Image (cartoon, rainbow, N blue to C red; front, side):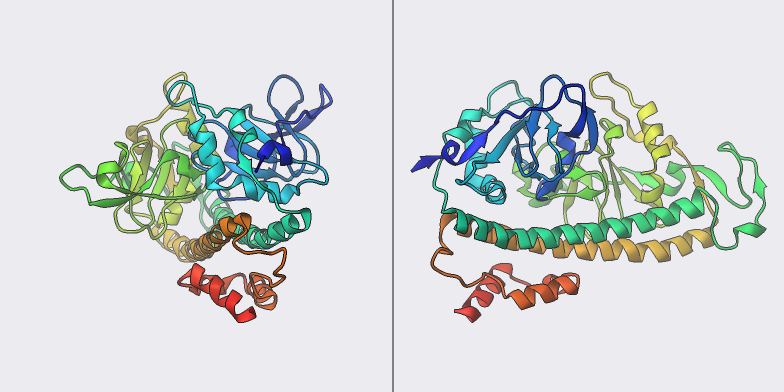
Length: 436
């Protein structure tokens, strides 16, 4: 048995021209479950920080990012700089394949070894790099590595396509909100005069209202007497800008003490801490007994479509309002009252209804694609350990794990077929069996 450091360079030296602006990847740029990451800004190449090349794997070493699976492959076209909280894994020439290294890094066993090595103060614990370097493993020959990576990459490419479709639908809804309610360019606006308001000139018939007039903040929460036996928990770390990345199921007795806020379909989640980080998301068709952390403000629409509430409370202006009203030095935070006092421009009921009809269809479609994506991830994650462990001997068995024509058909149809697969494991075995 070999060590991971025999196959992979861990934290290799990378030279960046000093004083130049290079791509920078912060921890917040990585979404658990998504393979590729690109720089979210550029910074001057100086001082400390992880340095990496295109194709390198970034492996979070700090809690809770490590436990949450923040692992990604850097996909920019030039060398980059990143958070000091990354381990960098790079394929060794003629020994390992960079895509295979990424998939290998996703193994639960490797993450568990890293987690076991963590030391430091509570809440800021970090893994020891030796846990990765000393991890015992065995890599297959390069042709097999490439074949395994190719199979798994097909799933990730389809996942990325789905994510692009979701972003397009969300951009359409936001663009409609901006055109109608920021620039006042909605159908028929030409015949409506402007009048003065506390927010400046607005269209006649529109009103400036407090958020509490159109929504309820923190509508309901559970306690020991009303708690279900099992709950589905959304914590702060599981929400990245615009989406809920994952939900964790707990017995109530084992759930974190912050698992208290009840959510329902159409609710808007907003992190109360560091609101400038834009940790917000729209809750779509949650399972029964889905509960959010008390670190969120949960906004429930009561007089407007939930899509209007979501768009109106996630604009740059609203984020600025929250940021300016946050208190605390190290961890600036806002309260439920901060949300309730926010002033929003509310159009006529007829226009709100038209906006709801158009945008609810968009977010419902995005949610359907998100379900398809989750199914793809489950299938990929089912295959991952079996491929890496050699249970599927690809060195001697040239049968693909999926039917290539069927897979291409799914791509062309936008992965609609995946949503109808009730049991991913059974489906994979059926495909494999039909080829043998």
